[in-house]
Amino acid sequence: MSFTFNQDDLNKIKELKTRYPSPDALCLPCLWMAQTKEGYISIDAIDAISEQIGLAPMQIYGVVTFYTMFHLQKPDRLQVDVCKTLSCKLCGSDEILKHLKSKDVYVNHVECLGSCGTAPMMQIKDKNYENLTNEKVDAILEELL
Amino acid sequence: MKECKIVSRKFSIEGSHTLEVAKHHNAYRSLEKRGEFTPTQMIKIIKDANLRGKGGGGASAGEKWELMPQDGDKPSFLAVNCDESEPGTFKDRQIITYDPHLLIEGIILTCYAIKSKHAYIYIRGEYKEYQDILQNAIDEAYEDGLLESCDITIHRGAGAYICGEKSALLESMEGKRGHPRLKPKQKEPEWFFGNPTLVNNVETIATVPFIIQNGSDAYREYGTHCSPGTLLFGMSGHVNKPGVYESEFGVSMLEYIEHFGGGVKNGKKLKAVIPGGVSCGVLTARECKDLTLDYEAMRTAGSSLGTGGMIIMDEDTDMVAVLKNILEFYHEESCGQCTPCREGTGWSDKILQKIVNKRGTKKDLEKLFELADVMNGKTICVFAPSVSSVLISFITKFRDEFERAVS
Ligand SMILES: Cc1cc2nc3c(=O)[nH]c(=O)nc-3n(C[C@H](O)[C@H](O)[C@H](O)COP(=O)(O)O)c2cc1C
Ligand code: SF4
Ligand code: FES
Image 1 (tube, rainbow over the protein chains, first blue to last red):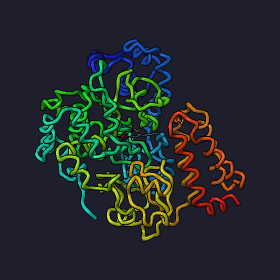
Image 2: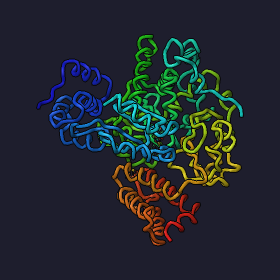
Image 3: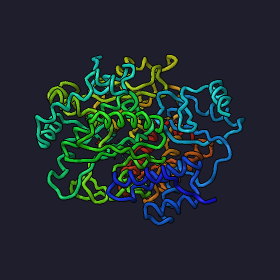
Image 4: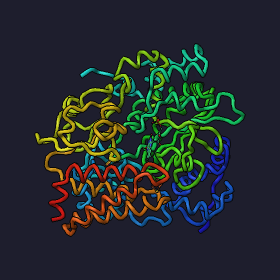
């Protein structure tokens, strides 16, 4: 399946180019546009971005693999990011992680997401869910699945 | 404890993230003062206030601003650091959700002082929810004609702690992997595509309007001589009321925890505090006893103030498990450029896993010290030296516990 930017995307890219000293800077913004569209970054998308901003596909690929939020594969289940860093751990993230094991979701362990004061927490589709308990997790997933 | 609200003044006002409400509460008033000062004069005010960077390092903001050329032939840029990834830190998030216009106001003033026509806000990818609030505020500011003197563009990161380091942040904005750059010997600005660039933390920039509006002396009325002003200190972990509460520098740490945090959870005793994000050395309850919250006192105590995000641990906390948890973070987040850091974090993490699994030996503790030594002072950025001091602080201060774990 090939990847193309639609006219809206192209206008956005054109506008963004005026905001930076070099089109190289559009690498991350374009990757976000691609991932928002398709849920992951396909090799075709990398080629399309390369065409727009002039960076070599290999360099863009190297960028994709550096940042943990970019995915090279289409997700097959709902992704749940659970923070396992210190403040969350002190407040019971192990319990939440254990509880999530029984659910039909892809549990991704992540490092501190800046919700330490409302720990434990998880993030699903860019949205934070905080002060979690097992019951709360059940209710949230019921709504999303 | 004295109430100080310089940056958090509007946090509890309903709807304060909108331009209408913010303006009703005097947002953008400091811009009226802008015309009274030349850029150089404005820098002097910030320098006289001794505003110190609030992203963790505490460097003088004024001195950094002075490094920016006032009449260069290249464009100057401002990059606002909203990467906020230091575990235990969640203060910049409060600013951009509750008072984004304060940040925009600070950006307009800062751009005026360093003669920049464009500011970027580099925000961590996981803050999309808050990024949307901030973008709305920027759109409102554009519509209201507030951004005629400078543009503001949000640049979204994609999950890499190291991109909070200022040169890695700029590499990332240049469309590359977030690898920190080698530091020059002399003092100079940062560079964005070869153009002079100032990198400051969100909270630093959000403090600028108060100082410009009220003068440097007004800011210095708060805090101590060397650490003037206030900070959005925060608490998480085993504390009754975790959260972010602004306070002046120099107050007693334990009083702060008691007053704002309601003390340790479940009536337990305090065991230890990590004062400002996990990269600061741990402090035992005894060390916290007469400690004050300012850069100098923290240094003297052998730790650092960092971002002011304190992690509180009660008497039942397993310090071996805590250190293992922190090393896991470092192992995950090392950018991998320097061998001592890449290998050292991985190896220490593995050894600690072994100790947690009750298969560790005395030799393993020695090995951790060796690794700490290897990681100190031999790398491109200060990530590895921080890991080193964290390792040493935990094992020396809780020696008994670590020895018990390997016997
Ligand atoms: C590993 C590492 C991570 C950092 N992360 C952040 C961060 O998330 N946010 C931040 O403002 N500064 C961070 N810093 C500090 C920045 O390099 C830089 O000093 C700071 O943004 C400058 O702003 P300030 O002087 O206003 O504090 C980090 C530094 C290091 C070494
Ligand atoms: S010390 Fe670690 S994080 Fe810093 S540049 Fe070297 S490898 Fe990267
Ligand atoms: S430690 Fe989990 S959000 Fe910070």
